[in-house]
Length: 429
Ligand SMILES: Nc1nc2c(ncn2[C@@H]2O[C@H](COP(=O)(O)OP(=O)(O)OP(=O)(O)O)[C@@H](O)[C@H]2O)c(=O)[nH]1
Ligand SMILES: [Mg+2]
Image (cartoon, rainbow, N blue to C red; front, top):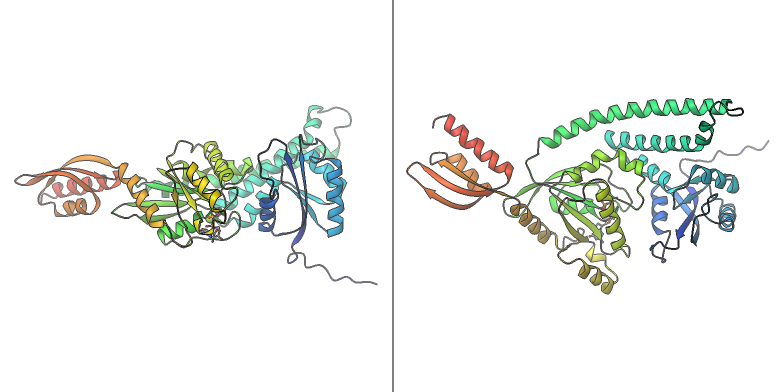
């Protein structure tokens, strides 16, 4: 008898052949069409053993790529011993089934791959719930579409077998789990929004941008916070908020957010809504983009589009070109910068430009301040020292026992100063 040692499946990375289709009118760069997919696949733990790529006018309904290409992918998978084929595009349930049959391999489309990465990277309870919800919504939509043609024939001869019952049962279970997850998420989100409203009056800044642009590194450079940084896609899934002390006397809150990517699965966008809401509710967005990437401007467009989709299209923003230390093609980078005058440029890694960025944000914060008139009792030492510390005094006129002032300060500081004056009056000092 031959006994085979069982494969250590967990330790062995799964071998994957990448397949991509680019439509003829897609402006995607020709240089490395599958570069991003390759990074995504590696992030998910796959070993990329082959690539097949096709440019066509139109996708083929049955198999997305042409039949010749599908055969080529199959051969490549056989030669390299690949376990699965990963598609750079989203597939219909029918395409997925046909390709599975044709190649005898597991087929993973782009949405499923991204969902998988999110699932392995979720750390917090909120992120885990959000990812599971997105995965189930993805599955549910597949069940529905896969069996939609049968439903229309409900009760017709040949459609009343156990297959249909099973699908109904699966759907019911998925639906139940989804409802359960939604409830739990609501509770977690409630807690978060209570936390967030406790810091409401402060100016809020959020870092947004394409995945791997360097947002977390910049959060670290700006606030000294210990953010998780990795040269992998979707290193950050949870919003992290830190106090940021700007030059001068401004204190603001700075949040790091989940990165964006082309064709972010819409189930993910939906279930990450509360995480992304952090960006919508900010006073200022720092849109961080990687100047050293040849796809810099395409990434910027995708980020802008996604911001619009989540309702953050109107939030004021400052464009920040990061990784200026790593630029290889100077003339191209200079041309990009010239097209986006007024943007900031930094290296979050070396610290270059970081102080200038902080000073610019301080300027924006000051410009947002309220100008208010106050009458402060001369004996209100604490209120006067708060003003000296936190506000800019536009003018002041001292009377016998009080001082009339016009000050500029954040809404939060004005409120605190007013509270202190009221307290002082009440105590009758
Ligand atoms: N050369 C260079 N590398 C940088 C710079 N900023 C960040 N990086 C590197 O870029 C990679 C991604 O950085 P992160 O800060 O994790 O990027 P992120 O935008 O938070 O990424 P996600 O959380 O995945 O969306 C890491 O390897 C960083 O060390 C920079 O200014 N210069
Ligand atoms: Mg990050």
